[in-house]
Each structure stands twice: as structure tokens, then as C-alpha cells.
Length: 471
Image: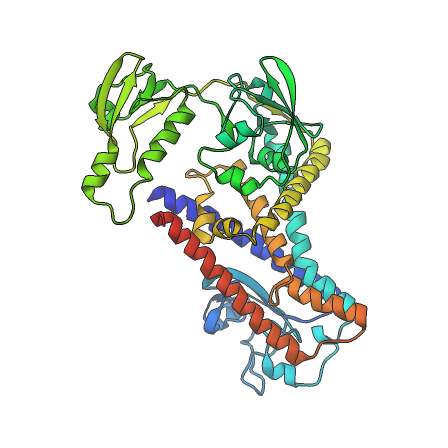
């Protein structure tokens, strides 16, 4: 329970920071062009229910100001921006006077346009206001990466220091890789460390150079490789090769019940030879595949009953846990960790370069969004929560917050009505054609965009639920 609370707390803090900064970008751009901003809210005050507002009478009395008066329509009179916190933590907003969006005042829009309204400003100014939040998102990510590199430096394991090399899937072996290969360069660019970014680069590469038996070998990559296939394959297309050697046994587990101990080496499962921990995990995953939602307890018991060969000679029978675990931790190789420290001046270009690579990678991955696999990989709030660690780690927190900031910026730039990108498209259209879309068209587009966004949120949440229940 404690780990769940820590995860949720990190998500709330990260999103609160990003929402305030994103909406602050719109706010500052609007103020720069003397556009009236009526509300600035963290989270949504749906159905006009709010947790806090600077317009609340008790707060006005606290700061020595009279309560806000009502206008002829029963709305609060504008005496400056109302700052508040809503109860629905699905985002935030700034209410910009004269703008057609989810927070627009229809009565106000029926009135004659005013010079302090969004709708009376030139298209290029409205475009900057709409892009303000996106720009701030990207700048925020770059600043965070600069700060992280300056405060903690950059720690990684060089590919050449991965003593046992990499473990590859059958497809990777067909592409020319061999177990034990160590990545050196991709299209001439040195591989700094192993990460999922390496798979992304390989999927777009023409050549990959590896160190094999202390010799450099250059492989020609096939065309049209799919990074999602590579990342989601079982076993993984590429992963660090881990020798199998038991480090410790967990109490009350199947491993403990059959007397396994530290230092033991498992060499086969059900007469299938295994040579490393990677293969061990893969073979356990295969055991659960025949089970379906119609499988009985007897079916599960049969699949979980296995025979192991230990230390090449001893044979033991054991029943795995219901989630197909044996109950031991594997001894991890003690690879050399390289830490590169940055001065304040060095961290600026390094942080910007790091952020730019993350942004480019995220944009590159958008092409998979419109595939069946890409759609299934979409995550909602549950999936996002799960990427945060069980314990509060400030370095990890800021790195994930920066990544979410990039994701928020990229998603908002998509040309979907109701998102910033949708508003920007209409402004660009007006700049090019010198014809302003009608308010009715903008209003209808807003409704369509809102429906699309809700549908995407529901779909992403369904993906989260499906992953939890293994559907």
C-alpha cells in the first residue's frame, strides 16, 4: 500500500508542476498581448465545484478585500485573474476572454468583441498564445535535464564493459547478431550505453558494428525494421546477457521447499537446456502460454509442475507459484559503472542535446501510434503511474517529469481540435488565407475534438485495465 501511495504522490506532483507551467505558457503569452485571462486553474473545477479560489469570500476577507460582485448574468465581475484548484485531477486550464474552447463563456461570445479579447487579436498573436504552453513544456524538459546532469551527472555502463555481452532473440540472430556481441556503433555513431534507444537506432540503421570475440564485425541491417516488434518480442530482441547463478533464496517459496541454495546453477527446465538467466525467464513465460481464461486449477497445476536439472547432475521436481515464479534472486554481474560529471557550463549544452534526442525519439515513435501494436501500447493514468519507482528517488522523479513534459508538449501539438495544435492549425490557416474561420465552425470543431480526446482517454484506460488482468 505504501508503494502505491508513493507512486501516486509522484504522479500528482509531476503533473501539478507540468500543468502549472504549461498553462503558465498560455497565460504569459496572453498577458504579453494584453489579452484578459479570467481564470488560471490547476485541475478542473467541473460543474463549478472548486477546492480553492482567490475569488472565494473567505479568502477575500483574509487578504482584506471585498467579495467579488456579480454582473447582470450572475457571473463574477472581472477584477483580475481568478487563481484556483479544481477537484478533478485530469489537467488544468486558463480561461482566456473571447476564446472558443472548453471553458468559453457563450454569453460573453454573444456580446460585441472587445479589444482585450482573444478573438480581436491578429492571427499571429493568437498562434503564439496557443503555442505558449507547448513551448514551455519543451523548455521545461531541457531545463530539467540540464539540472539533473549538473546535480547527479550521468551514470552508465559502456557496451565494452558488459563482459558477457548481449543476449539476442531468434529474429536478431537471423539479422546477423550473435549472443555475446557488444554494441560499438550504429551507422558510425558510437553507442554510449545500452538502453531502449539502441533498439530505436538499430531499427532505423543501415549498419551496426559489434565487438565479437575481440574483433569488430559490421552487420548490414534489413530494411523496414519495426522498433515496436523489437521492443515487445518475447524473448527481447536484445538484452544484457545474464549468467544464471542463484544468489539468494526467498523464504516460503518453491525454491526453498526443494532445497535450492546460493551458488546453485540451473541447467535445464523439463529437459530443455538453458544457458543463462535470460533463457530461464523465457522458458518460465512459455509455461503459462497454454493457459486461458477457461483453464482450470488442475490445468494450472499441471503447467506449474516442472523438473529442473541443478548443477548439471541433480534432478528435482517442483511446483511453481501461481504466477510461475520459482522464488530466487539471480547473481548480477558486477559491471563497471561510468559516471560523467558536468560543470554548470558543461551541463547546459549536454542537457539540451539530451533533451533534443529524447524529443526526436518521441516524435519518431509517433509513426507507431497509428498501428495496431502502437495503439495497444498506449497507456492511461495507471500505466503512467507504474513507470514511477516504488521509492521516492529525486533523480528518477525529475527524469520522468522531463519525459512527461516532452510527451505533453508533443501530444498537445497534434492537430486535433480542442488541443493547442488544433487551435494553432486554424490560426495558421487564417494567416495563410487571410480568412478567419467562423465562430460556429470553431465551436463545432471544439466539440468534435473533445469527443476524440475523451475516446482516446477511454481507450488508453482500457489498455491499462487489459494489462492488469492480462487480457
